[in-house]
Amino acid sequence: MRETTPPLRVLIRSLLIAVLIAAPAVVLRLSGSHPDPLIQLALYGAAVVAASFVLAWAAEAAQVDVSGGFAIAVLALIAVLPEYAVDLFYAYTAGSDPAYVQYAAANMTGSNRLLLGLGWPLVVLVSIYVANRVANRVGNRPATTSLALEPGNRMELGFLLVAGVAAFVIPATGQIHLVFGLAMIAWFGFYLYRLTRGEAEEPDLIGTAAVIGHLPRARRRPLVIALFVLAAAVILVSAEPFAESLVASGTRLGVDEFLLVQWLAPLASEAPEFIVAILFAWRGKGTAAIATLISSKINQWTLLIGSLPIAYLFGGGSTALVLDTRQIEEMLLTASQTLMGVAILISLRFRRWSAWTLLGLFALQFVVTGTTARFALSAVYLVIAAVVLARHWRQLVPTLTAPFRRPDPGAQQPERPEPRHALMGG
Image 1 (cartoon, rainbow, N blue to C red):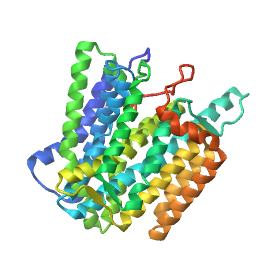
Image 2: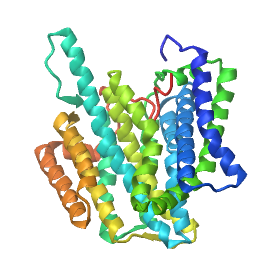
Image 3: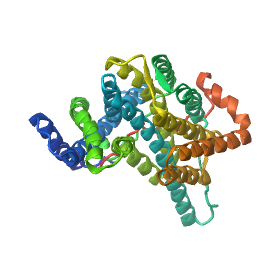
Image 4: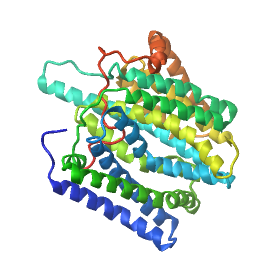
């Protein structure tokens, strides 16, 4: 951890702000009243974001007591609770109400495309800007046009590549089957197992998390547990009405409910993660930032997808979450984007042109819409992926086998910050 600890008032201020933001939603839910859907959307959405930040502070500080890869594995799961709560609610409800099937798929594809199409490029562009600004100050360094990854990051890319290729089964079959879901969860479990084989590292805490982390153990542990319980309670209270208000608000405003669920809900749950990653990049830790987002992508593209048919089954549905034509197109587009994302990183270097291309294609989907546009964008993603993989074909086999190889003791391990959370507050 850092030598300098922020003052205690940073913790008090951060927690006070979070409580003030989340309190109206909790009071509203406990009162049993149902105001205008737009008011509910604002209040419950704000509560989800506030709870996400509280989870981040607690999860980061917990790494003082829980070391190494085990912390990464457990805390990564905790950090995605807000997103999973909303998406699994849609999948569970779809078991008894088929109208909700589209929303489960929409939330999942939206969160994945938002992470890779917006989060990844922003982190890289900020990192390159910071690096060039430092180079200009020194005066004798050449301009930087890419962000280098660590050799140890190839393992994550291998996991994401296998999951990315396997995901094409969904648009090909038009469903997310329970067997496929269990396979994706098992793949994620193997990923967590590999993480636990890593060496323990002392966490680098900043801001609110640093205040908590520097507290005496007798005060720190009860506080961390209390924050976990508080944040989880707010999320569980807010997830259902937030998800319902998204649909109702779309009807009220005459906006496509599918689009609101696809983009607004993931944006609320992804906000802390994006802030974390960008702040890491701004502080000159671009490699750590992109490693965090790669880990998050693996989480979403394995565990989240795999959980949907399970929630659907428990909600009264069958063993397969059947998708309609629109959802199949969205899945194809998301899978194609994922494959391109892996391809441009397979050389362990994220170039500026790649970041702008990902960002441009992500923005283009909001301008050019419809079935033809989604198929066209999918084709563009796949063509770029094929060209890049063909250029770096020698790296393909090492990447595919990386999840199964023992780490080389002589190889530099990836700079691995706390996934989905750090630098929160203060």
